[in-house]
Image 1 (spheres, rainbow, N blue to C red):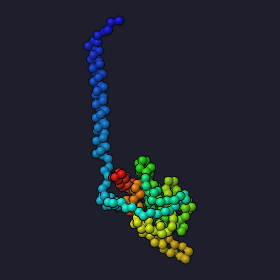
Image 2: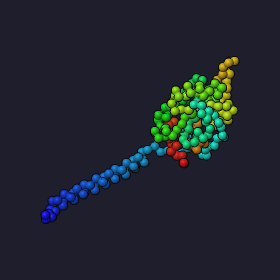
Image 3: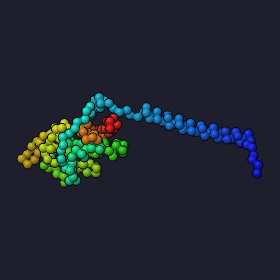
Image 4: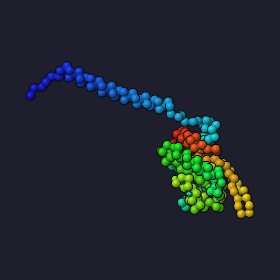
Length: 226
């Protein structure tokens, strides 16, 4: 069998196919580069500490280590500073018989979780730390906290331990007698933020808007130096 030499038409066809292939590759590369540039320009830049402060979110220049403590969660398991490590923690200090502020804050935290990117939501735990341990037993917390979100955690324990922790994260509270057999607890309404090292990283002031809270939290976590 003899080899057939390529004709000019065959050579031109191969050249055209090669050119089209090269152009297609270049177009794909340019599209990727342009897409990356557009993303870089249009994505929301992280908010700096001063911008956050102006909008009611305080981030410390140096996160603060909290003292050792031993509490118990709503499942009856021990809760210590170790349980603050390895993920971000949003903590609200309140109590289950709170008529308005606490359930509103817990509902807003649940909505905030829905606003987060899935990968950040997976690295976030939400706590209700009671300021009324006499009434908020693990059993009571187990009925209350999962109502807002099945992954939320309720924490209780000895009063003095809770009081020390609250003081260290700038949560003020006081028991107020209503009658001989009834009382309430007045308390500040900040949401406390612990970083993945277990340190007190800052706090969010009320009132809370879930979209804004999620935006601030995303910005803080993105700027965190691991």
